[in-house]
Length: 360
Ligand SMILES: Cc1cc2nc3c(=O)[nH]c(=O)nc-3n(C[C@H](O)[C@H](O)[C@H](O)COP(=O)(O)O)c2cc1C
Image: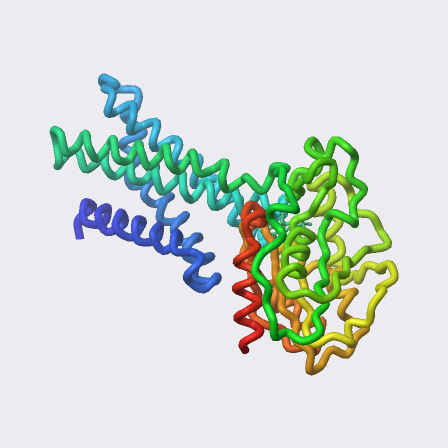
């Protein structure tokens, strides 16, 4: 086998691993992880085999194409580095303070790297496809790059305070057939002493209706109760979580690591008196928060149904439903996940999800 054939084979493998990585949410997690490690190794090998390119950098004329190629390679390298660091944090190989940033960073870096890879490939392709077609390939790749970069703020939109009107977004279709219903929610709002300048410190996941601060889980709970009827209950911890986002994540991490069930304030109703518990909470470190476990543990909920709704910053359901099942003997249904930015427009999604559960 010649060196050229090895290079071509490696390039094909690299692109295939990249595409496999992009399908990350559809393949088993372990495949995504190991695919990622392999991708990084293949990328290093690719650099090693093409080191003559880097050695020749100081020489010759820097044409616009050459400059563009160099810029795309440097940016691609940076995106891959971000991809690696956030990936290692998500798999707990390293620990950064904020899991959500990592998730958004990982997705953002993946989009950016894809776009830059397209640019990189199309510049190489120009050796073979010249003239108008080659230029069209580059323009196309640049447009995709712009779309990827513009998409980043969307991915991170969960990070900003959103203004809403409850009167407009809570009412909607009613759902019957769930028996006696208790909607229970847990979230940062209600368990955090937010200062008036909440925009500046909260970091994530709060909404303002006039002067009232509303959390994502809380808003979803208002919608669920409006749809299904029944009673509403907020889980309140004795302790107050920090107003700043990152210290909250550290607190939560410590709770998980110590298997600590935070003490709760009095629960005004008996959950055993209901047929259906709609349980709404945020994804914390990819799982169900310990305060939700504190709430469930004292009750015998056999024969009852729990319908989980999980709000998150990009992690989907994560391990939330699996961890929830370890805290209760209730019939825990398949969960619904609501991305934090989608909370204000989730009313019909919730009604549809509850209808589906009522029919099962
Ligand atoms: C302690 C903590 C840990 C979090 N961990 C994750 C996570 O692992 N994955 C994720 O997608 N979002 C994570 N988030 C983001 C929240 O799930 C998301 O912002 C949610 O919508 C917040 O709902 P709330 O306003 O009801 O608290 C975390 C947030 C906090 C405070």
